[in-house]
Image (cartoon, rainbow, N blue to C red; front, side, top):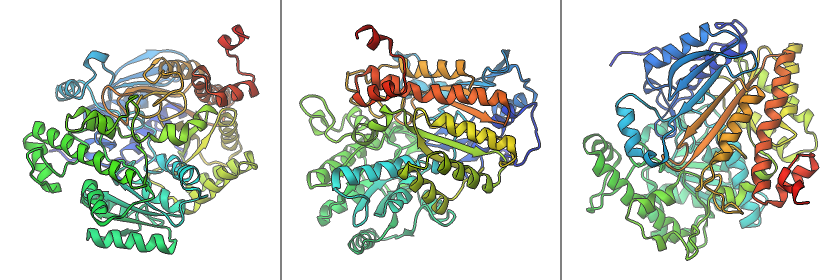
Length: 573
């Protein structure tokens, strides 16, 4: 295998492209593949099992070269990580338009995807991997923190997680946020990760660490967690092994966690999830599982489905014992059911509802109704001082938002940067554009040393159709309606986003989701200000419209408060 150069995004104000909009995409693509950011940069895998930034190294080089030559009135078209053409558009059109992993519904399966991938015709873009706006584990951290705090308030009757134990699986790019989120919320976290390299990566991260302690012995890890809970400590503990083994041991010992969830890569039964058993009754350690994956993918897939069934059964058993249990968006429930080793009655009630809910309907949907979601930005200067300045701007802009101020201060104290310095916070409709305009002015004034990239996760209020995650249990039954992310994509394009993307299968796997992304650059110019105001107003507007149309009162109140036009509501008045 040839040696590939290590990529890291350049810092500072020197341009390598013909404008800052192209430069931003050029740097962010490389930032996605920085070894401090990506899970497997040699294979162009950023996070989420096999979520890639480019289809192959030749495509990566071609994308970077095309961006360097791209004019200010041209748009680069990228099809599943491969640059396929440059079109003459106009200055306010996106500089890059990306489509990843999209398949006609009848063919939208992992099996067909893998055939295309093997033929070099497609890649899996996950959400922010193939759209070049991944910022490392921080990207999901506030959402995880807010979910944990909401669960504490709603289900445990507490303001935080102090004196509680949270148990989950996975320590990858996304799941690695859970230990720190639990600690930031004041609780104890005990997590299992089958891959020793991932455990080591989390434990070795800069202090404050994403993982406080690694305890090799399972019973010792459980005991340490129980003692820390009793002492009211904020502590994260990792154990190297399969999450199902951990859950079954908790059941054997009669230990019930306060919160129970999972963030293993269950969305991908072949290249993501790691089984610990086979349907024939054999036990698999990690090395044996990896050998089986390489030598007999079909047998590995059966083993994954068998283990998923045991996984769900263990979670349900702990739920019956009193653990507050919820799905964290990896599609474990549906995948376990699809695999054929779990009965429908074991995971759905008589009305077809999941026996434990997803985190969005349980805790996050009220925020989505207000157009709130994961607003993120990256300092292209590479200088952490620029993030300090943007944190200060956020605190000045929203002085009465105590939860936001608490998050920004905690983030500044506790979150290590990966790659280019970045920050995330949840802002809603009527707020995001204010932050964008303020950042743009700070670039113009020289308070920020270089332009700022502003984007978000595809997991947002109005950009996803995902019936087992973001749109699970919609009030009007419109869980699977995928018009909304397409409208979001078109509106972001019309509003002047710097680059836009539309993906299939992110988070939950092939056939289960469609989702859109946008990124817009604050370069300090009046033209950027106009684009920022349009994009950062209209993007969260889609969340308000989506939920107002579904009949959510919070969204209708928000729409009325902001004088949002709702033609059907007005027609029926």
